Figure 1 (tube, rainbow, N blue to C red):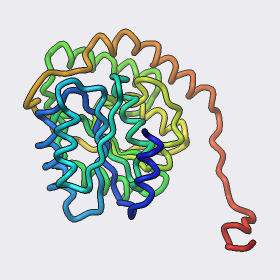
Figure 2 (figure 1 turned 180 degrees about the vertical axis):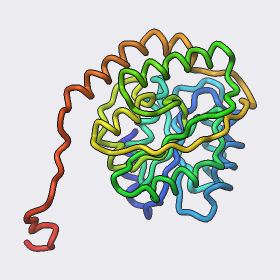
Figure 3 (figure 1 turned 120 degrees about the horizontal axis):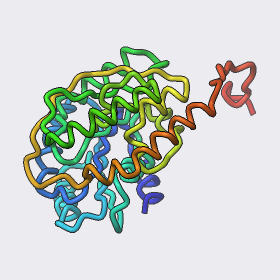
Length: 260
């Protein structure tokens, strides 16, 4: 299914920006979110890839109906829930944009910040591969805010990624760099550290959090916390095991010059 989506995508002109939305049981939030994304990116070449992560509330039917009237939307579906990181990766593997933007499917991330993230990435130059949103005025519960604060501080101490809020869903990355990052479940929470590991830099953009309009969170505190410590030390190990990032210069390349 993913291979077919990639093949179909390659037949159409490439957009400049691909927005990836991982979504699980977000039938009531997605139409408004998609309208907001289209309004924010109306003057740009863009596509949106929504990955339905095994929803059971009719999210797939909502996406099918919306896509029939909006050709910039492509919708993929997991037969069963595989988690947020897996959904982001599924979207990435079919993305065609030069810049890939991630945004949560619950509507708490405001799409109005997407152009600013993409522009911040372009202004920063080719050595910067990630523009990371950092939430202010979070609307999550007190328990979630406390857990995130503790996790972010611990992550900062171990990984030294200079990122206050690694869990914010709003991020813009250069697609070619995003594809190089080592994948594992919960990988989307460590993107700044993984980008730094590849020898690139990160810029940050403050974004205002919003209230969820419908439903409740599908990815809670404990499913993050139980595996978070192992993931954190795993990323710490990955960073330590890469001492040098080579600077590569082309000496000769006949294929690039168009020679047989």
